[in-house]
Amino acid sequence: MKNEINQTRKPIVVPIIMTIEQISETTPGLCPKSIRNFLTERKTNGLSSSCAVIKIGKRLWLDQEKFLAWFFSHTEKN
Image 1 (cartoon, rainbow, N blue to C red):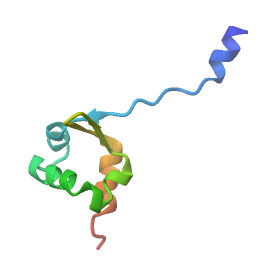
Image 2 (cartoon, rainbow, N blue to C red):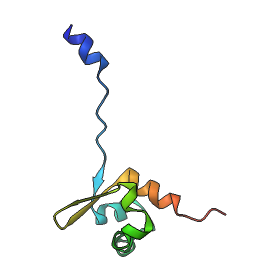
Image 3 (tube, rainbow, N blue to C red):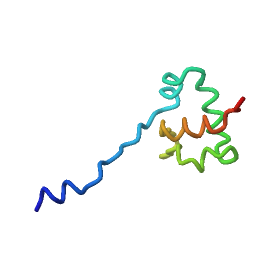
Image 4 (cartoon, helix red, strand yellow):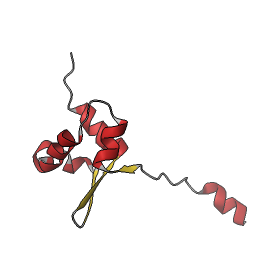
């Protein structure tokens, strides 16, 4: 019976949480200054509603997948 319960559980997806510096290191072309600007304007540029920003106290972290999805959704399409 115990094995049956374990087989029906969904796997836990843990998001990759990164600092501003880590995101800029892993994403060529995004400098920390640009990311900080996005964060400063997050209430007007849609970043807040993307749920990519995690704020605890004064510290900000970014969910890598959600942040990049937000970023690429705002790029111009040629």
